[in-house]
Length: 189
Image (cartoon, rainbow, N blue to C red; front, side, top):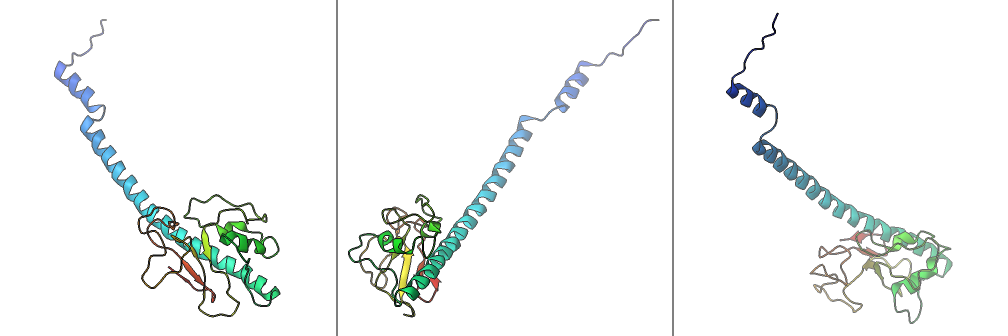
């Protein structure tokens, strides 16, 4: 008994092979769809990240205000002040470690500033915020803090406090602006 296998015409074999995989066109379409979805996801995630950083920044400023209010209660209503201070960190160092040990509140999450050691002195460290010394507890509506500004000069209405190009200084949030914290706890973007 002889086994006889059927002969498959050449054309049928070629068709069977071509149906077994994907064509280059199909693969390109799938890759293009994946790229579009990836771009859409990260585009929306990037915007949400920036909004989240702004909110975290505002919360940092409010946490710092709480420590400052406790400090003021112990110091006749005066917020931290160091005559001749060259940086805000020199004055805010008075808050550590007695009034707060959380030095992370002095770093804006949107900035590229390095983390600060908890509870340690920050007098010689770089912080992300501008601090307006000379204020007292209970002065409603007084500006206390802001994101790092373009310079330390007084600003007039309409003058840019933050970078308009996204370049340093004053670019915690790129060229999108910055937060202002007032003595009543209100934060304005």
